[in-house]
Image (cartoon, rainbow, N blue to C red; front, top):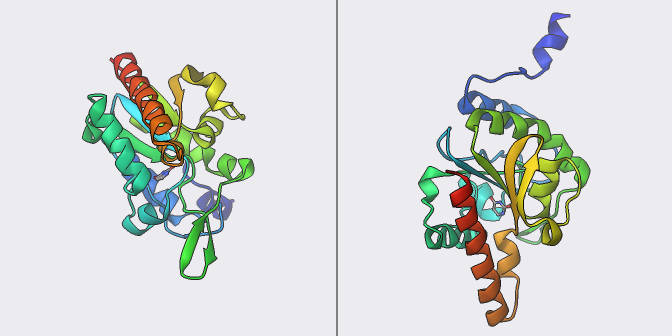
Length: 203
Ligand code: URA
């Protein structure tokens, strides 16, 4: 059955470039952009961060975490003494899921089924990056990595995902949505403290 074999994605990928090419060629699992945003960073990075999905700016740039949440993540990484260029950054869902509203594209949260659709790719990706620790940024990433819903507030801290050393913390977008500046500063400080712990666990 040669035709069926040809349509089935290769089980193994030589490197991230071939994996990303296969993801880019695959049907999106969500309704929104058709452009896949691949992960970014050196293979063999000690820390891999997993977010939810690319946002509007990430979709336009074709790079993960370059919009408002990405800028906050960059600042927190700096404050924790982690170089962004040395870590791997990716998303649970590789396409921007949105609903058009006039000229704007409104972010839509992926469903558990949509997250599951992308899980196979994420696992292949992490096999290739092979980080010492994989970090779930928020509930969608935790769901993707654990394979089940995980309450971030209660599970926050070190975790194990299918035998991989992991860590669960909040998503930087959550920090951006805290209206009270003092509460936001406090939550930011707790996020940086998590990153410092992640840094020490990665060594
Ligand atoms: N939020 C995410 O989860 N990922 C991105 O790449 C950008 C924003």
